[in-house]
Image (tube, rainbow, N blue to C red; front, side, top):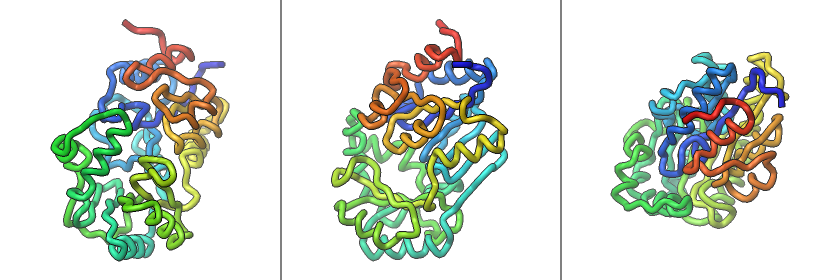
Length: 285
């Protein structure tokens, strides 16, 4: 593979950081070395800007694709931003309230929690962590970055939203919400099918692959020069669409089966080893 001027897209959760939100020093070294060798590296994540904490930006990146493809930024320039409309937001908030489902609104300006989300979500987040191989106490979850950064008591009818995530009491909640909002992208996370923990709503037609296409057009770059790295089912369109796809060793079976290459897990320096293997950087001590 010709290594000149690659454009590299790296997922965050389970790829750049582990499921406990810890950032391996090896991943920082890999990204900095690849950029020093003339490659461009972009964060490509479901997170909105408010969830991209300072230590991630301090790595040194060329930009960010966020909200599962609703937002594209290159060196501070906003290439694309597709938002949930205010009217859609009103409908979502009213519907979730009527179903007594707690939720949070994902915006570049912050994470805005429904009235009882913080206390209601702790058991669900504990189960989510357990499924990722991390055992956390209620106190650890409540004091973690995710919940402490969330804003309570704010206006919930908003026009600056990328996504909305909501707690599922049952899988039927997702099925009913999907039927109620055919004009939106409906998904789940935290599990497959009836094991899902959250539902989410976003702009219809938005994917990570679509966002990458928009960025490549802006950069004047070729899809043949792309490498994508991810760990989850939602990353599969990103790996399928572009030249070379790398799955993390801790990734789900679907993405590991379709990837061009499977590297080690986050904890075992998977990003670093992949960058070395494909000539994006030289090994470092």
